[in-house]
Length: 128
Image (tube, rainbow, N blue to C red):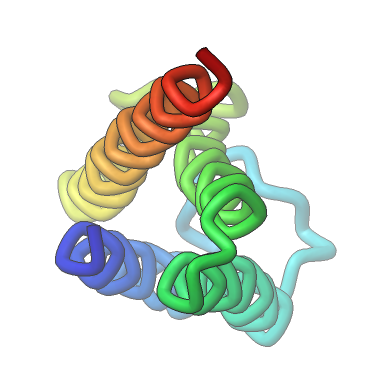
């Protein structure tokens, strides 16, 4: 899980750095967004993931996995770029960073889901 989280954090950072540095080039984004705001958004969402990972590591798995699910969902939200402008309106680098982040977030979400199902199965076995 922690390898997937590291992969996602790096992919997310690449996307957010590209987004922040080329903000004016991204089609359909509000003019009110700033590079500093993009970086702050990355720090905030990564903190959610970091806290979730720490809680899982400290055996507070349910709440940790829930936070990691939120963290992964935030990465899937990058698909919103394609809501405001089609894939063809984005450069190859924009598409690459968006899809890398989304793909890594999806892998994290799959692993989180797998672990949650395992926890539920373990809990049911204890109840029986």
